[in-house]
Image (cartoon, rainbow, N blue to C red; front, side, top):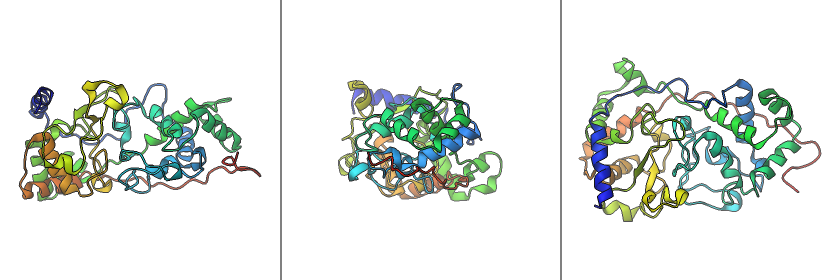
Length: 340
């Protein structure tokens, strides 16, 4: 293990001593001061999130890779964009993404507003020339103009406002009231004995060093700050088996060698609904993911009983999904905005 790994592990175990501060998921996530959530923004953002016409082929929407009718991901190892192209990373769930202090696996987007713009012009994802070209399509659809005006006022059809609307919608995608939430609020019958054992083991072995805070994603970082951890940290058989070290991690975004293998800590909320796991989607079994994390991050080989107890606890992190109705998207009149 290298010097940086040793320093990181020391920091993790120092954090662990203070980690068992169990908190329920708040009823609302942090929101930037310049984009307060309103009903009109949320309704507009929902339509933009669902509309595939802003991809080059007219086939890929935000919801294609972040299916909110299920776990907020696409159940694939890596997502498929336009023309069947695939990237190198697993689509993270959009449920509870509002509680992340940065977005994407490498944290390259400080806010949801920034993240919303990225996939549109990504050649593998939605494949548009640029975000302004995508916005030109929005402007050609008559039904969107009154929605923008209701959300932002006159002459408000812009890339920035479209991103703000999508972000406002995504901030409604939270899942409180899980069995864990009820348990830490005092309803001790909400979790069974195995889940409680798993909760204690999750803390005692060191998982809470990284997966802390209400969303189990690194605690109380301010928006845009980010919480990153080297993964994998300890050498073991799983690294080559699942190609866990092939991705440069945050180095891809910053160009800094010191950021090699650093990743934003993902939420564990609804983890049972978001297989496959890890940044490359290489592991399709939650029990195996727990074994890998124990060995790769804590240099621990857990007894199978402990693995299953932790898996049971992770199941208690699945909250209540709000009812989502699919919107009817505004139509065009006598033309297709996709065919140009």
